[in-house]
Length: 193
Image (cartoon, rainbow, N blue to C red):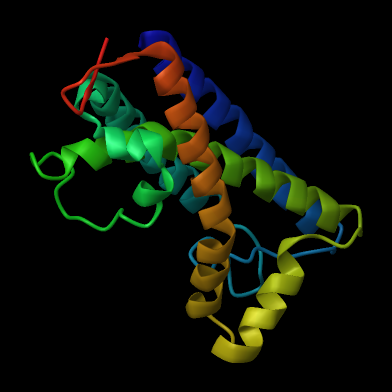
């Protein structure tokens, strides 16, 4: 368990540094600007300190929840392992630790770190494309959504939702495949080591 959490922390830190570097690269050559309204200055520059604080908080939260999820893997409901798409949109709940929610929340918090790493890779590749002045992947989507929602935070969050869900789906599929491979299935409706 420790190696998995430490691996996640290291990869998260490397990808965060890559995201920062590619963002600063694109901005420094005048090819792009920061799209995240929380991290951007009014001139479209990156507020580096704020990005580091937000990513530090995200890392602490996701690493802690990953530890919790690894300790509760045996409580994941088999329905989610057989059909992870059932868990894809079933993520709105207030208390992941409740008896009712743990069978899905444990799977969610096992998959979330992988989905976040996918997002970070996407952001770094997209930033690099912008810096190289090659058509990127997110700008056309953002421009299209902006025609409906206008400028501002609503457009940003709509783009994030559209981009995140395919990565979330892939992370759930990969996570369930890894769980099925590692653990044996019991007849109780839950998994056991």
